[in-house]
Image (tube, rainbow, N blue to C red; front, top):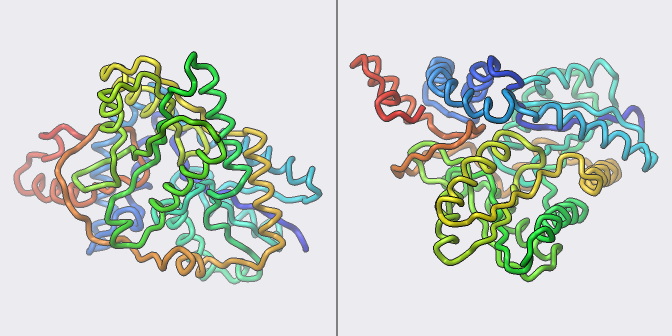
Length: 387
């Protein structure tokens, strides 16, 4: 088979407070996150948005220790995966490619070439596919492959999504059960799945399968859990004046409280590692919303991190991918309902506070604000106080 490598894809995150501004700039410089009619506006707009979000984002990161633990956890997942693969008789080198911070995907690819990898499995650490997560990384990789003849000699295969993997479902069910079993009336607790949201237009106009995969994944986890608890799925991290997938987490929690729910077990369904959106947004912001609404027994299921059943699931994915016919980057979009590039947004007004997020679709708001500031000398975003 030759030398085998596994490329784990993730978002990345600022490790120190001084990293926050550059991280946000990288995020909003991505034309797949913010699509503009004039490419020359991309970096000025990214600077504009990042400069106005940096202070608030730094405050959020300060609350969780001054930086994101995402790199450390992902590296631990990589080490655990390597050991599990060895136990299954498969030697492989593990590489980590982050989209917006170190170690960048480009850095990982350079090491893959240097190490002479002959067979590569590309595994996104996003269980469900979205054009804004796995899709963005796949597009970058496809571009790198087209530009480098050395990469074209590597036999590779892509795992587009894996939310149905039995080991993953079992690991999620075990973590949920652990939280339920600590409650005096476990069967009465309401299980609240909170997924990272995306703009509604991604799904309705661009054909993003994310919502369908999240809904199916939630159902499969509950089937695996096999408990009588009622459950809800909602979407968090909404940013900007566009309509996102609903219900919104910050609205759904008070609604449940009004219906008499007292015990809430929150499950971060689209995240496999602790990061800003679990540690700050869920643990602090949504806990406060729940308490103010009268839900005082608020429990949060931990992220999978290096849960042994989860790591075994990743190893099984890799082993199965090595045996199966290769899936190429160009095939992914055909498999995922022929996903298009980002569509125009449908607008709704209503801005929420949330942690820094990787796919905040605030481009048009930022563009309008930039024009207003250039013309009037007064910043719209400063006036409304959202950035």
